[in-house]
Image (cartoon, rainbow, N blue to C red; front, side, top):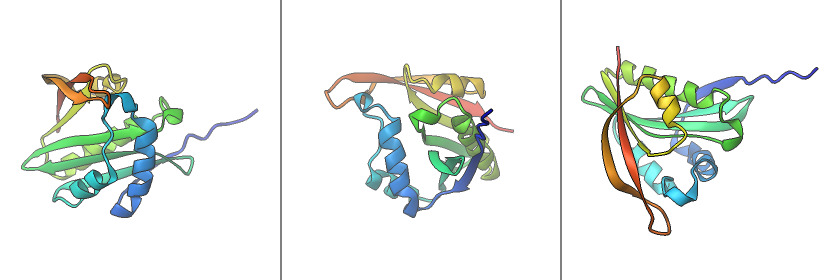
Amino acid sequence: MSTTLNLISLRPGTPADLVTVDSIMQRAFDPRFGEAWTRSQCLGILAMPGVWLTLAELDGAPAGFALARAIAGEAELLLLATLPEVRRRGVGGALLRSVLNDAQDRYATKVYLEVRRGNEALALYRSTGFTKVGERPSYYRGPAGQLFDALTFERQLG
């Protein structure tokens, strides 16, 4: 009989982790939708006040990350990604709960996020109390010029 551990560990990330973040992002985000950020975009935002990076490992191997920021009582989940082969094993949920806890620790009372219509992560966001508060038609542009709507969600904290 074999046993799968599925031990998820989280840790704060640093700019030195952006090679891992980039590798996860390239595998996690479908290139058809143009959602992945470049390493320099991640580095630029990580240097800003109130921004934090959380890395997830599953059974000791890199599995996902979350990038978020908090300022003036509000927080925003900027990016959340998990490797395709570890999806539905709790990594995304652990990262999201960590962001919510960290946002509250930074005195945020609300967390916002934006997601492409049809993204499979919508179920996770809705199941953790996020509600849709807006839409941006044709916001995301894929590499071939196709356009995709963005949905804005909010969750109250506390």
